[in-house]
Structures are given as C-alpha cells and as structure tokens.
Length: 217
Image (cartoon, rainbow, N blue to C red; front, top):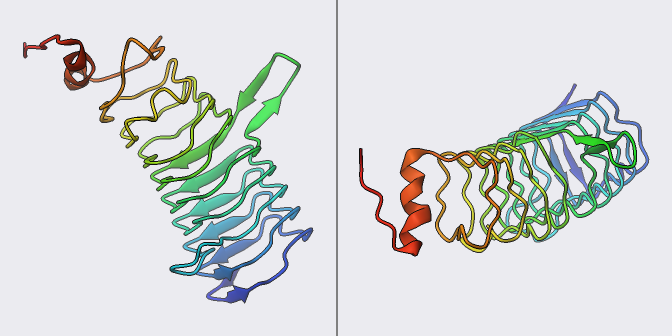
C-alpha cells in the first residue's frame, strides 16, 4: 500500500499499477493514460487541487474493476478508458468526462451487458454523452448540469438521485428505478416511462403539469 504521498505532474502512463492500493494520496496534474489499473484501489485520494480547472488524465487506461472510494476526481478525463466493473463510491466527479469510456462487455454483435457502480457521487456538469450504462447501480448521485445526451441508463437504479429539470429528455430511462427522485420538469407526454418505478408521492409531480390533482388516500 502507498499512503500519504503527493505526486505532482507524475507520468503514470503505460505503467502497470494492477492491484495497487493508494490511500490518502494526492495526484496533481498526473497522467494515467494507457496505464493498467485493473483491480487497483484508491481510498480518500485527491486527483485535483482546490480551485484548479484541470484534473488528471485517464485516457484509454485499463480500469477494469478499479475502485475509487471517497476520492476527489473533479475534471478527470476518462476518454476511451475500459471501465467495466469499476467502482466510484462517494466520489466528487464534478466536470469529469466519461466520453467513449466503456462499461460494456460485448458478447456478440447484438448481445452485451454493462457493469459499473457509481453511487453517492457528485456528477454535476460531468459528461456522459452517448454513454451506455444499463442495469447498473447509479443511485444517490447528483446529476445537476450533467450532459446526458443520448445516454442509455435503461434498467439502472437511479433512485434518490438529483437531476436538472432539462435532464429528463436527454437519456433513455426505460425500466429505471426513479424512486425518491425529485421529478420536476419530467413531462410524461414527451418521455418514455415504460417500466419506470416511482413512489406514491411522486405522482403529484408528474400529474400537476397536466392539471390533474392527486388526492391522498
């Protein structure tokens, strides 16, 4: 285990960090591009300095089954990384880019399944455009201002999440668990809610824009 160390502009690119464990470490302007991070664990690590607008680079890294727990990953760039089975628990991922990150295991041309765990994270202003994350745990996240254009979260658990009002028309939410989410701005006339789960109290938010009054039992 490596703990309580600071890495400034360190080049980890193309390195084998498989099964490594880092705890309470700081990584500032570091490059993990093309690194092997399979089964690596990062606990309470910071990947960006306070007030900085540039995070660490994870472009095309092998991040299968990597674990980030209570980490600050703001503005991180995961372009093209293989994140199948990755875990992000209680992390700050504000402004992070997941463009072309793969969370999919393609079995055949038409058969695939997804695996990633993103829970309790701050995903404000992150970029998930065209991302495919289906039937995965994505609960208790803050999605305000995130780019979810043409993403598919079909069948995923999005419960207790916080979304911007303009988020609902951006992504596929069929069969998702939306229980205990504030549904302000979700227009049931324009969004496919097939198989979506909600709580009793959320009905009022859905029907009020239609002029329908929901009375208590």
